[in-house]
Length: 151
Image (tube, rainbow, N blue to C red; front, side):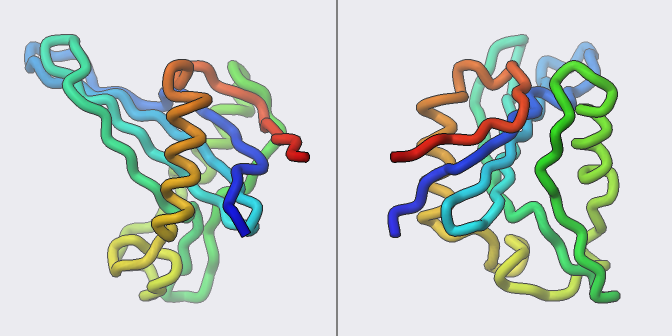
């Protein structure tokens, strides 16, 4: 089965570095995708600046799901909050602020990148290709949950 994005939600820029005299700055973007294999992938994109100009962009792909040593599962769930609302911000930060330190995670090669797991190359390539083609130039714009119709 050829992988395809079936839905996504773009949160846009959710964090940025403080303004200082330092010539280096960062802006951080998050977007979540569901693929037709049922997997949810988070894309964390970092814009890295020097002297107020983008010097490079880094992509990081994860399963936004973690299993704690206690057996508890913490995962991102698509919500219906609309952009530019308190609920939209809460929807993201309810997930983000509850991420656990690595030392509290159960070793799970399927879920966690830190031990060689995480999304497959095919999943990562599918999401990156979709993002670059459809969203990279408008990454600032937060979206509602978008369902993609396929023939």
